[in-house]
Length: 89
Image (cartoon, rainbow, N blue to C red):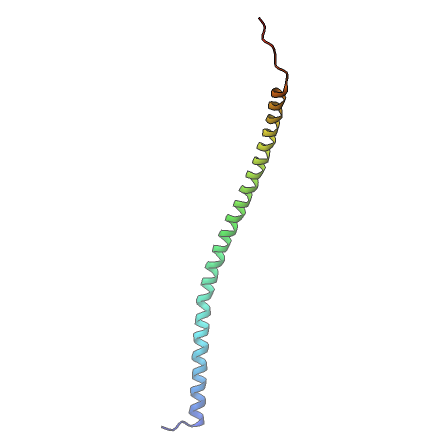
């Protein structure tokens, strides 16, 4: 069986067609995988944004608590430094 130039060209064209078909079939499955990955990334992004908002809220609450604690501490220091009262009687 001797391959002629015509047979060789046909085999080459058929091989290229098979490679192209397999490549396009692979791209179709990647589209679905990319869509799944993108939706998961969107979910993670919304969770991160929610966590950031919660952290900011907690930070503000902590700052308010620290301010209140500072106020109470200054009152306690005033009471401790006030002169002792002598009991009557």
